[in-house]
Length: 273
Image (tube, rainbow, N blue to C red):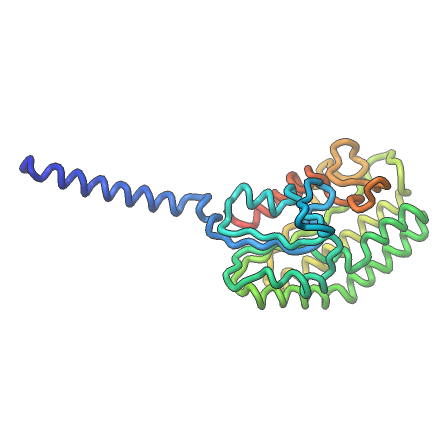
């Protein structure tokens, strides 16, 4: 080859190499998440109540920088991330106040919802204050609501999500069981009450799972992660707050470790890179 052609050939090869390198960077793992338009919906389990570090702009919704959705966004750098999850939200609040955050371009949605629809906060409070008989009675009533009313309420919320974000992957996360009932000694509620509360959580999660699958959504179950030594009665390794009279709002909610060790891995496992 004439020496006069060598600079030209070298330039062409350099350009090809640069193009290939750019293509590799575009298709590498983190860049896939960089294309996601992610919206987090739901109640206090999604806003991060119990984990602290609440943003002042979220007011009484108590959105935390340590919530699983925020942690996932920090790790994966999606194209956009918005959380409108709010403490105390019911399915009707999702429909009325949160769906407006969704767009046709939204590609990823997460949500926990249903606990407040069955009166979660009141039931747990009454179990502590009034004892076993009241606890069993109120959990039974909550289970009946979960089976008879919640499916329709979830359908309305899930239809709204799909209508506003027709192409999005929607991940519905469960609630944990609250108590490790294998522990022989645990201060607080009776064994009967603890078993009944766990049963109620399972009933609600079953209803939520069925509704999610009915709508073609992905169900992410966190129960096994909390059950691996991180429930109430598991001492310092618990990822759940027990009743806290100094801060009642965070009672029976995940700690920061519960968000990062329980909810984040369950979500990340199905959300995609």
